[in-house]
Length: 284
Image 1 (spheres, one colour):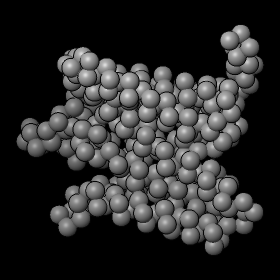
Image 2: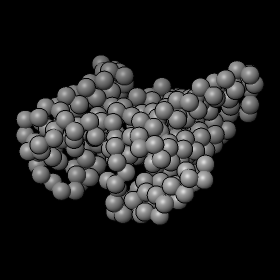
Image 3: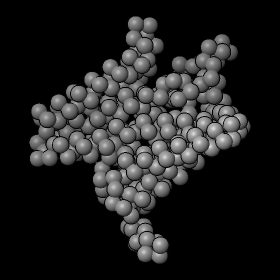
């Protein structure tokens, strides 16, 4: 145990390890807050769809040769979130079909472009790293940390300021619209924010695993608590704890960061399910 603590202290002395911890915890926190809303609205797979769009944006950045890929990935994902929201409201193309269409299309075209136009000698490695997260925590830079801090602050501020509006839109959108709340505006805000979080999370967990950060904490909280506030708080705390444990385990064991965090989230979900059955899931 002492040797493990000493090893952990040694790693924490390096800036890149601290960067991974800061970014991981912030992304986990923001993802869990929006995850509760998305799961309750039965729109949880928007994270999956937009993560594939982000992969397509990354492919465009590689083909064009842009050094800072965020300049292309971010606007492409945000625009897709807007289009996804509008398309999902179309009577001819329902929300789940729109997500599937954009998700599969972006993933296929992105992979095609990388294979056809990429000049990298390790295309398979680049794709695997993007889809499942980097196997190294050396990839995060100080610039990434400050961008994450800034966007996370915006997400938290928006969630706190518009908490009651988001709550109303989440549970009864028709009632919210009848009372004069601009439901389209708040749905739009949620879509934009989740797009920003997905772009940030790509470096940590990979585009295929991002949905786990959105879905698992919310579902775990719903196994124990019933009220929206309690579910939101528990999901946020659980998500941050799971991210912390996942990152520390990956550092000590040398496992992929993203996959390790998701594995811890799955374990937390199973524990929460057992606790929920024992307690009857009646906590408020």
